[in-house]
Image (cartoon, rainbow, N blue to C red; front, side, top):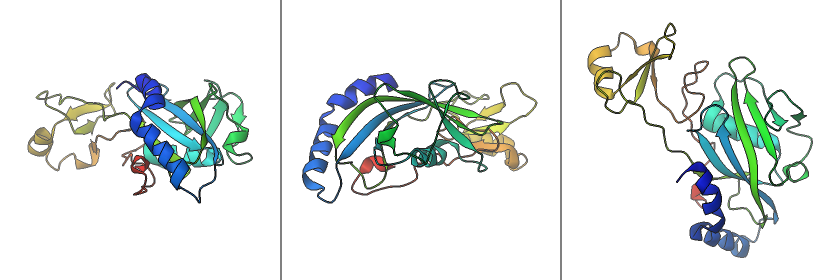
Length: 223
C-alpha cells in the first residue's frame, strides 16, 4: 500500500481492530490512555515513512529516541521538535509535558536531527483513540516503507551496496553483490556501505542498522 493509503486502511483494518479489542479486554494491568496515530515521513524523500502509535502518557523524548534508533543515530548529534513544517520554528520541549498535554489531531510537527548535516522528519497526527496500548513500550510500529530498490550501476541488477565517492555529485556508485565482490574486492572496503532502510543513509557516516529499538513477542509490530 501507499503511505497515505495506510492512513485510511489502519482505521478499518480487521487485524488492527481485533488487536485493539484484545488489548482492551485482556490487558488488565495496562492503563487506558489517549493513543496517537503518527504518520511520519522524511521531509525530503517520500520513499521513507512510518506509521506509529504513540502512548499519550509518554514524552516526546521517547519518540526522539525511537527515531534515532530506527532512522538517525550516528554520532550523538542534538535534535529538536518544532511546531509545523519549519524545522527552525517554535520548539516543543521533549521532557516537560506528556504527549497528551501537547498533541492534537491534525497537528503537524517537524523533527530535526543534527544541526549540521541535518535530517528532517515531518510528523502529522492523523488519528487518536482512547484505550489500552498494544505494547508495553511507549511506541507501537504499525507499518513502515519497504526498502527502496536501487539498481547496480554496472549491470542493472538489484544493488545492495554503495561505493562512496565524495567527489561525485550523486555520492557514489551503486553495486550488486557480484560486482562488489568480483570487481571491487577489498581495495575499497572502507568506502563500501551496505544499503539500509533509512533517509539518513550515507550522511555523516550513518550505516544503520535502521531497526526499531525494541521487540515485544506479544506485539509483533514492535520491531
